[in-house]
Length: 82
Image 1 (cartoon, rainbow, N blue to C red):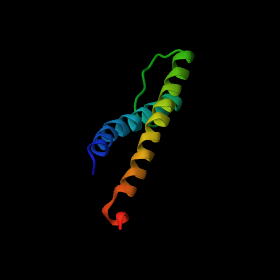
Image 2: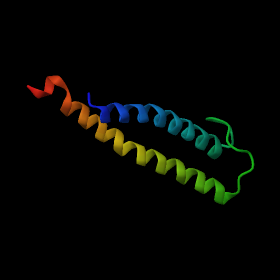
Image 3: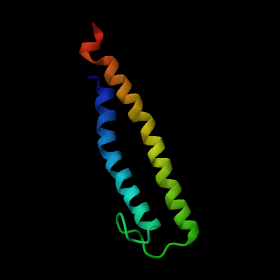
Image 4: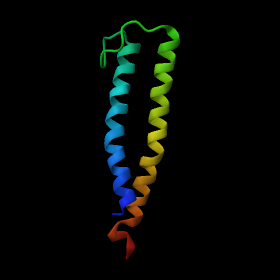
């Protein structure tokens, strides 16, 4: 495994749980606190929209490197090099 692959694995291990937590807080925000994690209590409609948009962008921007990482790992695997 190359050092670049290790770096991406480490970054993914940090980013994915934070995106999951963000998704749970968005769920709490949308459901009024019935589901998910507690969201900030007094957000304006604009802040709620921006909160949801930031979470969506974080997920998309993280998904691309992870999919690239999975492709690189499968290509650089020893069993695939035969």
